[in-house]
Length: 122
Image (cartoon, rainbow, N blue to C red):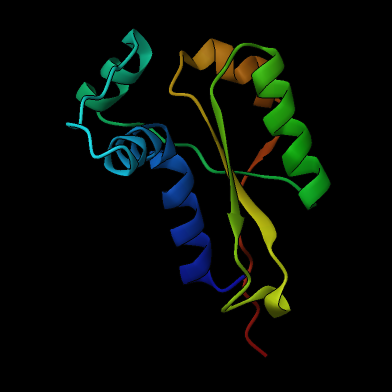
């Protein structure tokens, strides 16, 4: 993915816990009322920390999403439509786990490495 696309996909994932609730209210023509659990409220009020980790495949991304859910964590998987990249093929691009306490998330993702994109100029 291009760098901008990577940033956009991560942004979609990081806000899905709240955006999904807003979309549901809009679909139902209801007042927008968002119920936040303690972890979500703390995340929003104390700086919204994010850590970007890397996996090596769509299958691995899906595996971490499922692991998070099995550990009782909220996990939001993002699928790009493929209109601007991926040759028209819908593709899993990002996953946000949480908001939750660091130790709970690290129990699932602690073995992953920080994302670094190496660009080599030739």
